[in-house]
Image (cartoon, rainbow, N blue to C red; front, top):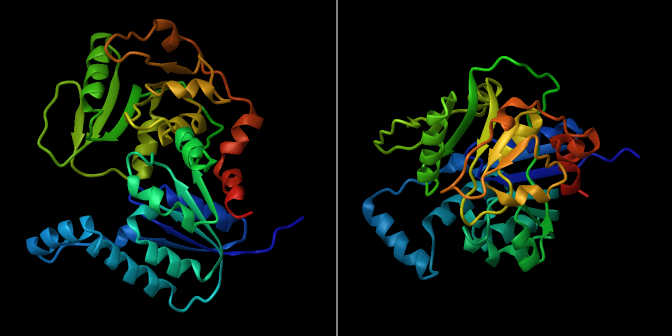
Length: 318
């Protein structure tokens, strides 16, 4: 049975560019997609007084200047559209309930995707009831708030592999509470004489003998190229996060081994200890030589298929 063409509006805060892969995959299925990336409408305070004013008004529940800015910009994009088959929201906690309700008046169905923990973004729990379906990559949040579990997706599958690598281990991340952990791992790899590349994105002036720093965010194609040049990917999860990051699914798509601090990964169907090494205790760990020396064991196709973006999107529009 061939599914009829749908008009889909994606409303996302796509600061890295991953959400565009969802739009592209839906368009590849002959759906008409309008992707409103409201990251492009970033609000800049006219003065420091506006910033101070917004701090008090948003915390008192009176008004949020950023929400008002996004509200006007998004509704302007949709003013000539009367009917939407499915609206897909990502990072809707950046929007006011009023904005979401106004958009949903035009929609047959509304879907929210959550790829952060609600503990990290608690405003999310106040808007859950506004959507027909809510998916989350956090198992704990799915249980607590009765959400549908949906891990991240593979956007970069490659059937080709190589044995020539520039780096043994690679990671790129933002500067946050994980920084001391990256430093410990960098120090450990340095002492093991393993060639690695760990890049921390930050506007701060930081110097560290075990890490590299970049003030300029790298594009997804630039990051993908560095991943292809690396034999193993490194993944460090945030303290309040149990869901699997994109680094995990990038390793699956590129058929690369993974070193991760996320212990819940052992409960996923693609887990194979030959491919994935879990750091149980960051204060006391060592990576066995056998992990570096053994070959990658391909994940069975029937498991891999459900994470591929072209299949992953189907559940969003049914």
